[in-house]
Image (cartoon, rainbow, N blue to C red):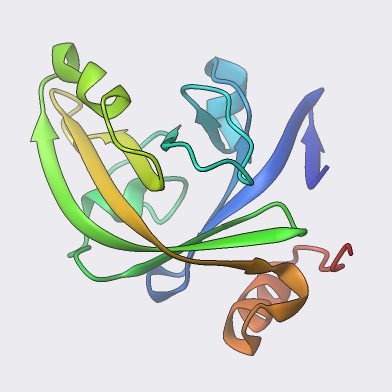
Length: 162
């Protein structure tokens, strides 16, 4: 387990170093989960080859918390990492779509080996659907020094589990 806040287990962390973004990820969603992190819309382990679908709040154009940076920056070609500190999956953002709240099921209809991130627009009238394709999977002990430095700076405890 990565982090426990108010009886909520955040077991992974999603990282976009170029946006200075790191968000703890729980395996479920509810209002309590969304207060401090992100949640998986469909429970998945990161060691599976499934489409991992993660949602979090956008707190507005002046915020850098949670998924706010996804709404306020250019995203195509940025690297995204998700780790449980045993395994790391490295993705590259390929597409960004603005959809209506009634179209959220589009996030569920995706191929395996995708990471789908979902948040609201700044005015909360639509949703931002960000898709990234898997580029690499490796053990946490092999993670690059820039990601380790980023996590240390963000006060995550780093211990590679073998």
